[in-house]
Image 1: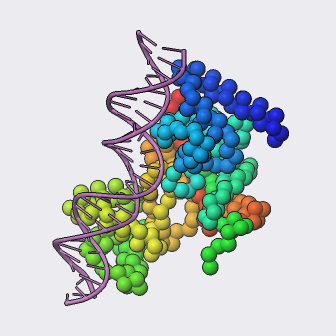
Image 2 (image 1 turned 30 degrees about the horizontal axis):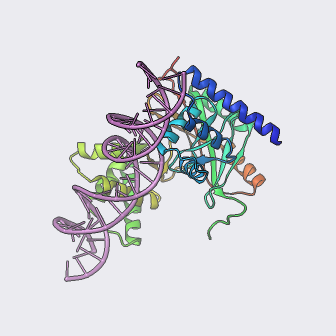
Image 3 (image 1 turned 90 degrees about the horizontal axis):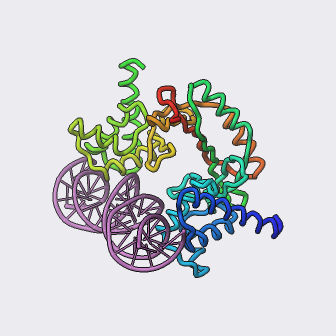
Length: 153
Length: 153
DNA sequence: CTGTTTGCAAAGGCTTTGCATGAAA
DNA sequence: TTTCATGCAAAGCCTTTGCAAACAG
């Protein structure tokens, strides 16, 4: 993505968030702006602690409580998606313009690789028909070792 | 399963657990016997709290700490499997003689339905080959509403 | 007896929340 | 000025752990 597109995307995200804030009678605060900016400068999946660390490193101190509250707003607004990576804490990823996908999670280094497949979607339809189940969402993740991390012997 | 088979199965499980205890120089205690018995009298998926409740109801008081510790032993011995059902706490299911399967989880009532499919296994092989990833385990779950629980409008 | 196991209560990790202060509208 | 947001610290939820007393072998 070129630098111009990146800026355009960031502008779009800010627009979407501010529109959400407006519709819900929420205020545009310094803290929300800082978190939004930082969140969309991250490429990978991230958790609360790493976001806090990045903000502190940039001397943009925001409390943990505000981060939790703002990540909830960002998720509700559709800008972020909360994902379960088989660990005990919450991870987040960017949502805009990204189709649903599955995750490969490295047990060694924690690296997350995304992949998509229509097979899963078809399978979900079949299974749900069989059990008369109304699907809302699904998660499929493969945990193992990435190329760089050899399995322990 | 007939009553006789049920008793036979329980005996087999007890045997497997006691053998595990012996191999690891762990002791056969009243508490471990009570937990083992209760765990294998449960048909569905269960969590720590419901197990504790069932034991108390039967006037078999065992502390939460001991339940946590014993469930770990049961899992390590291969008698139980810990599963992630998209909730914040740990759930367990019986492991002996049961092949890997996936879960349908009802968001309404919490009911869990198991299903198996070779499609997922094949898919895992393909995806892992593509990314040069050594799989250890996978989870696939569909969250939605079961027949009895209508989706909220 | 000796080393485990138990139960209790405290603590740990992550997340939420009550409340007073401070900022947005 | 009014209402909402923030930061702090406390609390909540689930799980783990240190320790003294109880128990298995």
